[in-house]
Image (cartoon, rainbow, N blue to C red; front, side, top):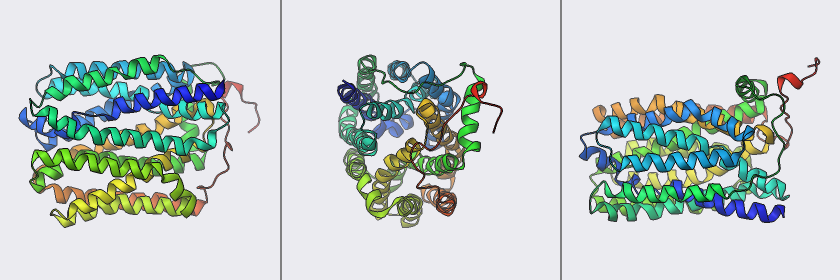
Length: 411
């Protein structure tokens, strides 16, 4: 029965992932904004607002997932995602776009963390938690394949008008709602103690202060996550800088995501073969190096380095998420994963307006080089710290979270 529940949940999580990654609007979003009088700076500013709206609700939404259930959180997130794109169909101008981004950000916050936590708990209930990395990699891969398919479809649909893809996107977003409604909450350890707002802060302190292992993993994963998120929104301005025609957007973006998806499916093999320490260094060098080489190339040669970046991205997402899942107690897993996402979104919200401003004034290559230097210093520094402390190979299930009111008087 537990195995059947896990299988059914995995299928529905695939659907939810596909509804979020089949982004018909993404390959033409920059062109859509530009048609409405916006530039690169406004693109990054809107995405900063999107990230900030996620930041505001990220940890509380993860806590809701731990207390009320991951299913409830995913249902709410799916509904908000549909509403956001439905409103985008009629939105015009910066401020109406901003309102849509806030709603979409709120919806994403309720999905982020709870989806991975429900997957891990479903596999754990079925006695297959060791398959999490492989399964998560496959789900991420499916999302990348969906994003790859969305690029040519989005460009084709946009031939009618740059707004038309938003109508189709709203329909895609709606598909997540029935999938979320039919999820089954797996049996898991419940968050102990009396539910209260202050308990969220206790969990954040547990993750970022009390346990060095978890803190180091979250910080490193967040740095790499911020870098991959920023690059996702650099791609279209970079294509525009290279002078590529719209047709190439529809050809190159899907291939980039196919590379990420193909690598994600086999990320577990790379970690098994090289070891986690070596993979962490590889990820930091590949992510930061991609920025630097793209910026310094300044020509079509930069596309080669962009493809290499997306290959490393395929390794980073499942490996780093699995590292956190392995060492996080199940009763607070959604909240802890949301802490990671919060840091990523907050960092992006702070960095992206600066990167967009520099791209508009000094050029896209300059912005890429500066971003690469930033991620190189902090990424390698965080990886070296984890390796030095020997925290990359912590035994699974080592940590236990104890609510304040249930603790004894002994440390």
